[in-house]
Length: 180
Image (cartoon, rainbow, N blue to C red; front, side, top):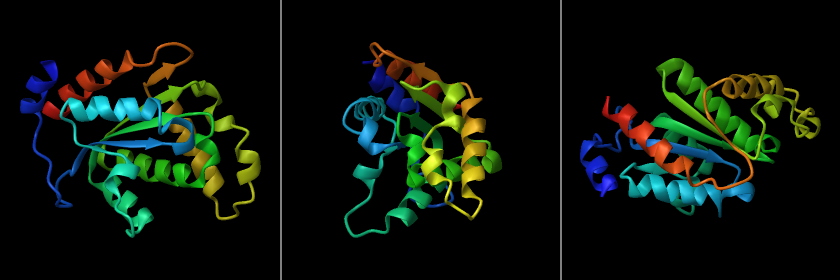
């Protein structure tokens, strides 16, 4: 019932690049959370009437994945970044995070970090960087800076236990933000 009333308050999203196509963009490490936490979060957001980008649902086979993700980041209003055990070991995830943080800086958009079984203070010290240090183009330092910045944002730290309690909090927060 609450979700139905929330839908009527949300602004329309369009497919033009001058307006937002998505209320929410989900960034996550697929092998860690795609079939559990992120799937439940995605379902809750969609049921609340929030048009949400998730890479496995929104990109059609044969499309340029990198281009579609960049375009979707550009066309999103709010970003939820689900940090999990192996998020920082993925160049794709880290490059996506750089794009998200750039949009935040330029446009003042909202980034909500969710630390799923992760300690935010340890995010930029992740052992995954040991294997990524061979990057010589300066990306490792940019990745570390983005991780430090996002770790200092207000977010949700979800340790052992039930995690679905955070969904209503996310949705309420987003509905208020989108409506304003």
